[in-house]
Each structure stands twice: as C-alpha cells, then as structure tokens.
Length: 368
Image (cartoon, rainbow, N blue to C red):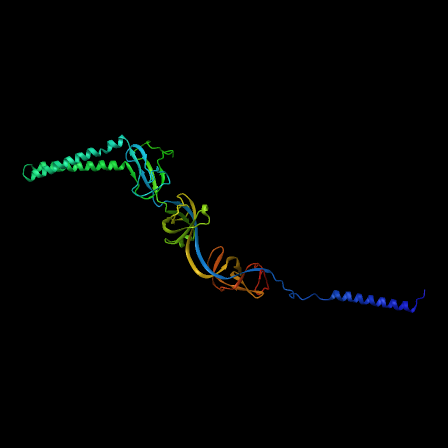
C-alpha cells in the first residue's frame, strides 16, 4: 500500500510527540523531592499570661472534732429528778445553751429533805451561839469557869460545822453547771433512754454533761515529713463535707509529746472557731494547716511547667515561636506555683499543647 507525503508527515509528527511525552514522563520521575524542613509544622497551643498571687505551703490532714472541756453533773444524793427550765420557762433539753451557775436539774424527795435538815441545824447553831455569848459574858464577870466557856465554844463550833454540812447537802441537790456551753447529754438511763421528771436517780448517777461549742478541738494526725513542718501557732482552715464551700478558721494549739506507737503519726490539736454553731463534736473534718505563706509573688499555672532533661522549664511565646525557659520553683499547690526566677509577670506561657514542643518551635496560638 502506498502512502502519500502528507500521511508520512503526520506519522513522523505523531511519533515525535510520543517521544517527547515519554521523555517528559521519565524526567518527571527522576526529579528529586523538595528538601526536608522547607514545610514547618506549627502545633496548636493555648497560652496564659503570667501574673502575681499568693501561695502557701500546706499540710493537709484529717481528724475528729471534740469539745475542749466537758463538765459532768452527778447526783450527790438519791431522789426524784426534776429538770430545770430556761429563761423562757421551757424544760431544758439536749442542745440547750446554758450559762455558768445555771441550775440544770434538782434532786427532790424525802431523802433530800431528811439529808439536808437545814432548818434544824440552823436553829441549833443559833441557840449554841446565844449560849456561847451568854457564857462569855458571865466568864468576864467571873461567874463561870474556863471549862464552861471552852465547852460553850466547842458547842457553837460543832453547830457551825453541822449547819455548813446541811447547806452543802442542800446545795448539792441542785445540779449547777460550772461552765457555759451546750447540754450534750441530759437525764438518760444506762440504755440511753431519756428520764422523765419524777424518775428516781441513784447517788453518783450522771444527770447531765455540759460542753462549750463556740470553739472546738480537731484532733488530727500528722504523718511523714509533715511532722517537722508543723508547729503550734500555725493557722489552719477546717472543712466538713456538709459545708463544702465554707472554711472554718483555726490554729494549731498543741502537739503531742510522743508519736503514736502503732500508726507512727503525731497527734496535733487544732482549735477551730465555731461561733455559728454549725460544727458539732464527733464530726470528721479535713484540716489544712498553712506552714508558710508568701504574698504578691510571680506565679505560673502548674500545667505550664514541664520537665526536660531533669530540669523544670516553661515555653514562653516569642512572636510566632516559643522559647524554652528554665525556671526555679517555690511554694505552690495543684493549680499554681511560685516562680522564683526565669519568668516575669506579663509574659505568656504555653499551658496546653506543650508535650512535643522544642525550643524555637513555630506555633499556632489558639484564640489569638
């Protein structure tokens, strides 16, 4: 078959184009990739501005509240029980607030009246005193002997002692509180059941217990290195889960002279202010003792601090990059920490996204 000149020309053109395309493809496959590092990854980070604040060195411990003192009122004589009343005439009850010198209860009945004999002993004393005065006058005139005067003097002394004993017995039938506080226990039998008025009580039976509650004592246990940090006089904050957002102020008042031989803990007494009466003896509380406090110092978020090669560092924002900065830390808690050197107030540090950062790393600051 014969081809025309035009056909041969078209074929040469097609083969030439195909060859050029093949060479181009081969060349494209041999072209080297871009040099590494030309595209820099910028991780997303979150930052916070460094400021100043107050920091504390805290000792956290737990313990149980109790009253600083308790007065137990016992029946000195057997008899029938009569519970006292408050200023409004209401019968006293557990939880009632009483003042020092207030009568809480009285033991009445024939046993008490017979034991007191106050009227009879008073009459005897007055009679013996009149006899003594008369005998002394006669002795001055020489009408009675020294022996008779001494006998009259002995009689009046004996009558005075008997009168005082009767008065004491009568006074003891009235159970009077020596301290102000709250009645924490009142007229209960051995099974804990309340006793009504008129119930017979035995001599020596506990009728009432009074304790002040405006200040309570938290007995807390201090462990480990905290034993060396706690001293009397340190301030404290006490918390109970019933009032989780409220803190009751207190102070370390006393340390035990020895450690508990079983738990190896040191018992500390924390005096707690309870003016509002919310806290009660027997409550289990958490006490935070402030071993040291510094105010107005440079502080950083705890989450901004990381460790690289055994050193504490932060990443400070410098334009679009970060600078790894070694810092020295001081006091702090789980949220903030004092920065003694390495940072200034007003600088911005990375708080999230710092896990893979390196010095001079380019970053994308979120929120800016």
